[in-house]
Image (spheres, rainbow, N blue to C red):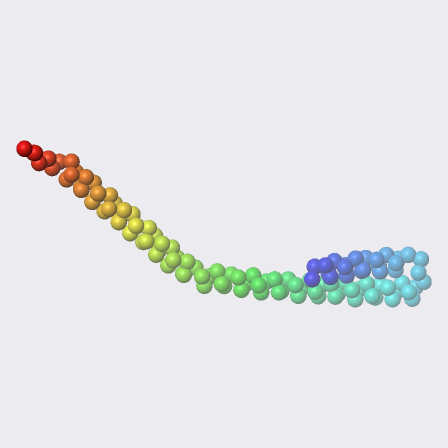
Length: 112
């Protein structure tokens, strides 16, 4: 779309330049009319492109707004899962430390 608009803009400039060169009045007026038509076409296409881009932007904004609660919920679940994992790791470490203490503080059985 932008290539097409650029091409038309160049065409307008060329036609306008030719119109100002040594052409007769009728040819100059014809070229000026064609340049004006091309200019209007470019402006129309640029406006349509902007409107289409605005619509896409609005759609993306709505999608982000719709996704926000789900992302927050996912974040909370991940946070809860991480806290659960921390708690279980602490419990396992405490249990292992208790067993190690029991093993080191118990008296050895004497052998006769």
